[in-house]
Image 1: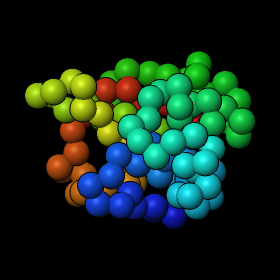
Image 2 (image 1 turned 120 degrees about the vertical axis):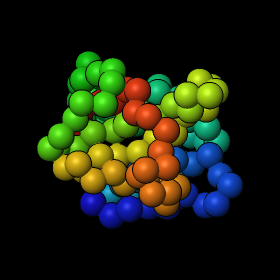
Image 3 (image 1 turned 90 degrees about the vertical axis):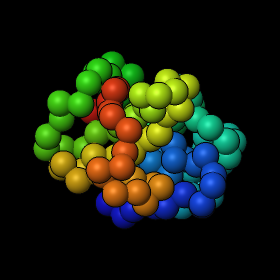
Length: 113
């Protein structure tokens, strides 16, 4: 899987994760999601459902994941309205913002891809 970085200062982490999981360009992912702003669970999962049927039902809370591919959602503990999407690929976090893993907010929700 190829890491796709979001443009600096953008809110395209969800679209970048779609692009990584579907192996398409960021521009194509933006078209599929339907916008280039902050993405909801519904925005991202409805697109991924086409390639990964049943992804909605494979949602878990917490951060207990190991091998495999996971779509992860992180939440700012100081402001729960701030969230961020990443991919865990066999334990390696692929962060569209390019931040080191140690600087990420805690994972609070994830989906098995």
